[in-house]
Amino acid sequence: MNSNFPIPGPVRMLLFPLSLMYYFGIWVRNKLYDKKFFTSVHFNIPIICVGNLSVGGTGKSPMVEYLVRLLQHEFAVATLSRGYKRKTKGYALANQDSTALEIGDEPMLFYNKFPGVAVSVGEKRQEAIPQLLYDRPDTRVIIMDDAFQHRAVKSGYNILLVDSNNLFTRDWYLPTGDLRDEKKSYRRADLIVVTKCNPELTPDQKENISGEIEPLLHQHLFFSTIRYGMPYHIVSKSTYVITAQVEVLLVTGIADPSPLKEFLQQHAGTYYQISFHDHQVYTIDDLDDIVKKFESISCEAKIILTTEKDAVRLTKFENVVKDLPLYIIPIQHEFLFNEGERFNELIRRFIHTFKQSLN
Image (cartoon, rainbow, N blue to C red):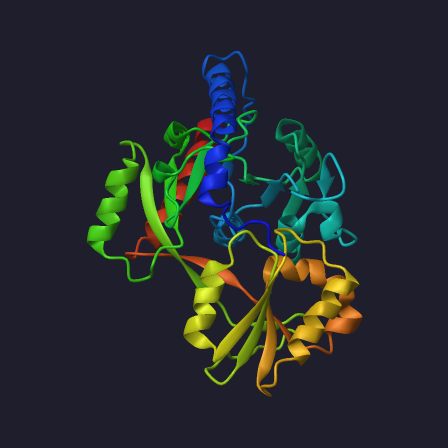
């Protein structure tokens, strides 16, 4: 079952001494970078970093996808991820034989969705970038996924994502809280996006959050909400409309499925859930459990619904899932207050300004 729900308060409080040790460790590390004892490598190519200050889902993968869609027709784009929970080590460039076990869930998803984009992984980004540029010398923009706290590479543009339901200003450090970097590290961001907002967020609520974060003069603050697309079958790609007459078995192995559950509460007749660990490596036994649970639902109008990241770990069972009503629901960021184009322009301006500075 899912191991990512919050640790009960009293238990987390017992871990408070460990939080102090953790905080001291990241404080020392950041201070060594600030004082130049640790050096950050700079590359003569526009690098956009997408990250957060906390563990858990803030929408990093959908933001990387947003940037790829925005830029791929104008520039040769590459993505670089750590490849979290993969079974391999070191640098790798995704190809037609790659699997999620080899490169990780998110990179596999990027590769499947954007065949013209170079998708790479490497824990040591300062070593992976030269190899990526050697393999794909036409690359003009690199998007680094989940790298805000990894300061070995100096990004040209830092995008910090903040969950509206768990602002870093109210959080504490691991393991008592969810923070994995200092709160003041938000100052390194060029652009801050408050994600998972209520689509009906009011201007007053926007101002309250802005006042709590206190962005610096050079920082741009945006607010986004989650938009779900039309579910499509995992094999045939045929689409499906969820209505109030449909019962859904939701299968997730992600950090925060709560927005998806809220979506189903609003659109489906009812839903049931099987929740696995984040980045679950699905087995045939897991699939058997899913099928048994699905068959126990008596409603005739019923489907199995999963996320795009879960789907890359389920496609290996294609011979089984092709006959199941197993659908994938896509997810995207949508900027509130009609500020999407301003966000896009800031990204393009960074790239064009960077290119001009090299001339």
